[in-house]
Amino acid sequence: MRLFLGPILLLSVSLAFAQSQDSPEVAHAKLEIERIQSLVQTGALPPIQLVKAKADLADTEDGVLLHKNIQQQDLTEDEANQMIAAADRRFERRKQAFDDAKRLVEAGLAPQLSLSTFLQNLDFARKEADLAETRAKLAAEVNDMARAEELALPSPTLPAPSEVTRLSQRFDGNGIFNPQIFQRVETAFVSRFGHSLPVSANGETAVHRALGFDHRGRIDVAIQPDEPEGIWLREYLTANNIPFFAFRQAVPGKATGAHIHLGPMSTRLSPMASLHRPRGYPAACSGCASR
Image (cartoon, rainbow, N blue to C red; front, side, top):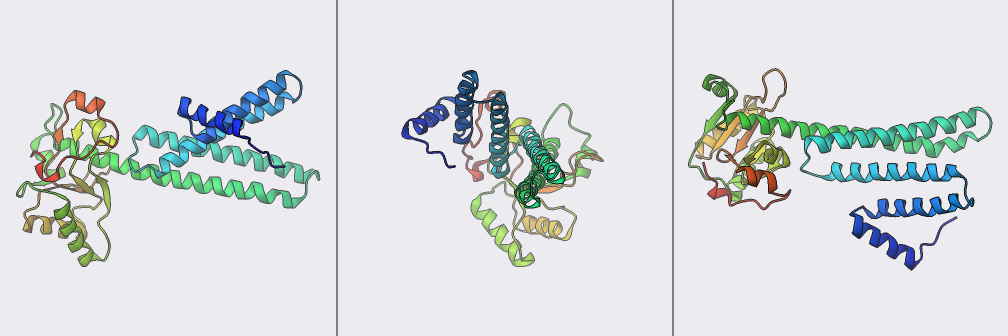
């Protein structure tokens, strides 16, 4: 039976969303819990209905978090971990529902056909979990790349010069990099290899901010510098006097962060700027970035 949500209930959902910053789905689920709780207290509904409503709320919250982070381009390590956990919880809930339905079928209390919906839900949750794993892996790779760049910045813990040289190659060129220059690089790369540059970070990211340096106006490309594509790209950038850093790895033996950073060396953020700059802060002029 379909329930009709009248204007008053719809308005209540909108107000709840505006006041709590919850998504409409979560706000509605919370209102539903309040409604069911009142009915349980009066004896109109059994307590099990309230338990089910709370479980539905938890699943809705996990779904909103999961879908938001999967679509988000700029993920922190914590957000990636939360996304994986939410996907795992949703999968376990659907697996439990399938197992429960299967037991009813085996006991002769439900037809075999009733398993179809539960099986579809379980398969969808498995695909969600796989997608979350892939998205988290990409976020981890960006994290590794950012940490590779951190090695090249002035720091009390900077490795010995010989180690930095072994891990990276720096070319200052003319110190200028902007969207027009990147477009020329992209066009030349596509012409040579038949596919676009695998850009992993375009400008500032949450990881770069967390590490305390300014990546605005720079682009990271997920290419191993010593593979054919990386060798060609480094030679092209050098021939055209375009600044770049080529990083072979982030942490030797632990985390691979091989990539090529296009543009001048990133600079340190001031402590206050690093702390307060919000996600999505506008990028500075690429050609004006300090070296």
